Image 1: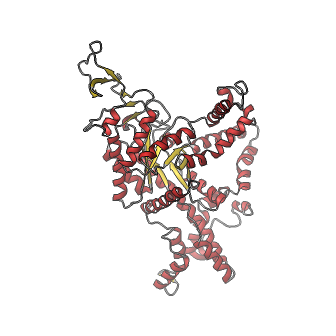
Image 2: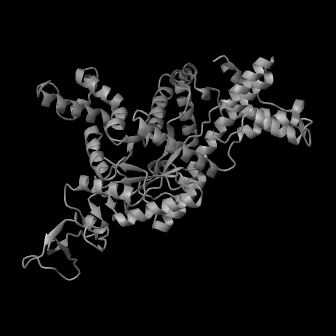
Length: 536
């Protein structure tokens, strides 16, 4: 972290105030230094500012080398985020290039007071900000626990060389705090409501906001039907609202992700007013499904008429008052949405919600966008709403048929391809290889800077509880827990196996020693059962 002072400088600052090595009341200078290092940020708004710099640096690195794309998993609790970052640090030695995605779907489904609800902006606005704050509280506590362990090593150092080594480890410590991309849905209201909510998310720590071009009061999950988009001017006003929120709060590098759902959205709620040929409204209106006005199909009382291409037409209108777009125009509307969001709305990243994971399709759209918005970059939803196995196997089958590598009857055409019997076939293995390479491919070919999975912890929790419950309430009883959970935690080196330590028990002991010395009543004595894991 750029603003964190090294140990020696902090200790020198403390000694300058308290040359005797103690503050009033007998508080040790060394304890002051430890707590200052464990509490790097005064507010979560400071986190938003610093993580925005991190994202901007990552975006510049990606522009220079597309292999440097970033990744995240959607987390619905602080503990999920904490364990994800710990796992990444254990795997790579660093969390650089790793973010947390905060999914509005999971807030609606798992984090609202009214039960499990669909992704329709029916959850409380404040629930999103609350989850951001919770995630950063958890990530900061992971820092505190880890730094406390390093300071224990420092206090126990038997020689000057060991002490220097311990101090070097403290100074080299890398935080668990990473950027959060926060889903603000469609803004939860008009542009002013969007601005007010954006400020709350930023103050909670979000350095990046993702907002979609759906109507707030009719918002749907991006992978369901019935989506209704707003005119581009309306969406641009919400992008500006987010930018103003960042600027007001001093997060000048704040990142805005403009999402378009137009590929699967066939409806609009409003016909915007065009002020000049070719303006944003005219470009939006041209895609409306219209009917010619004639003697056989006259304009009727209460109907609308549009003047297009030299004649009056009437837009088709559904009984609910919504206007459908012409069929098969979604792709063209996506490209226009993205260009407008970048060039007119000042967005930093795009999000194109697709109906299948297809590298060629995404790359083709991005190539057209870049003709008018060079350097366009994407965040891409590697969604659990896709049947990845079936989609990739179908893509391989179609390609191999076209290339003459296989005959029509070698592999089934439909959902039978999902069967386990195809796992180890040439086709199954090729599909898995493409899955392994998917994110690398779209980063290189389709301008995808950030790859995320929106709902992995929702599905992981369901799967893990199902697996444990089947064994525990079935025939295996305690073996089910030990074999599927604890033994795996120990062997993989997952720190949560020592659950007391994970939630700060040793941290509490250290603080008791700071204020009580030998009188401290500590939890970490010989009778603590966590000692059974000390060797692991």
